[in-house]
Amino acid sequence: MEILHFDEESLKATARAWIDNGIALNLDDELIELNEQFFEHIQASKAYGDYLNRESLTTYIGIRENECAMPNIIASVGYHRRGREITVKIFDIYISPELDSLIDSAYDSKYAGYLIFLVQNFLQHSNVPGSATKIYARTDYSQQFLQLMHQAAEGIKTELEKSGLAVEFEGKRWLAFRRKQMSA
Image (cartoon, rainbow, N blue to C red; front, top):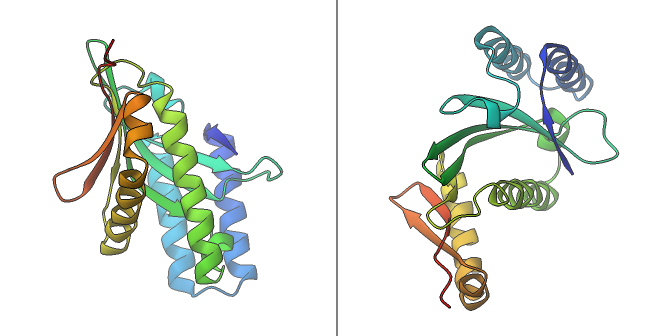
């Protein structure tokens, strides 16, 4: 997998691919129109590019599998810095019509894989104590998913602590992967 930092052309190409794919999959016209509006919003607000160069702004990035030309998900992320501490927030994840058409178990597996990839990638930028990667649960479904992630993290808590990482809820809807001070 790899992160795609959109420019205007790659955003337009992704929009066209997602819409064409939605039509080919015979999605409801309302869903196709929502996809069109979604891409129009990103383009009109110029909310694309390298999130590391757009501090405190929402940025939309694509995630694609290595063999794919177009991203299967688009993530809404924010990059924030305070002194040496860096926080990367995942606000929302939007899925392509192709991924949306998968059966539940395949969908859940793909979704989890993309989310784990994002967290691992963002943790590379959050390498000083106090830095974090946070995931926001906008819907009840995503909140349940984060609960499962948190439970899994509890199962490997000792290993996470040895690597200087703590996983905890911050409020009801934020799951934080936070760097801790390593003990000597």
